[in-house]
Length: 285
Image (cartoon, rainbow, N blue to C red; front, side, top):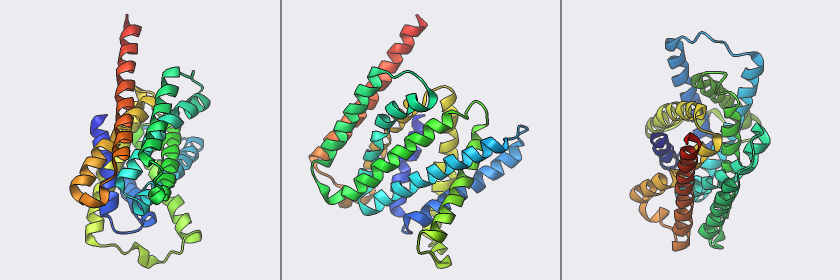
């Protein structure tokens, strides 16, 4: 799981390296991921079929994934990588609320407490500095949608192969972003002309950090709850912030309060992992 978190950590860095706008970025990312997965599925030759009902439902989840990425990359564009990835830490707060509502499981006090800690950490990180306010708003909205599609994916992991789920979601995302560009965004075909550097970064982003990472993250939900997956992914800021500081230097440098908030988020994730392990030991006994 932590290999996937490292790959997801690269997402924010690649998002800043790619010069094209966030809408075109997401369109290419999902198209490339869809093509990679399509080739993989073709050669693996799955025998099971996806019903029309499930197909349309997963297409809908793909639209949510696309909206999440639009907001996430826009957060990076209007602020920086550090702000965007730290906002993703609020996913645990949303998960503790949405998961019991959607998959009808019991509410755990531990999750609520840890989610509140994460919320406090975000407030500390902001430190009444509103220069990046739009970045925080987009980032937190992206975290909400990330939580939503992660939980919805859990409804299908035992019914459909993870590769199929991801490929259908990528198709849904491409359709969603295409409609958005055509009708709600001033778009011309010239916008799809990108530099070779951007194409290389997008191929890495779509082929490795999306198709591979997404498939594995869906697959692990056969063994972990959506909440545990989300808490593990909350470690993404560690890798993203370190990489961003290394590559971009001054533009990623933040104040003490920001890093204190980030440390609190990492601490909450680590504590959750420890408590979960203790619970598993008790259940075995």
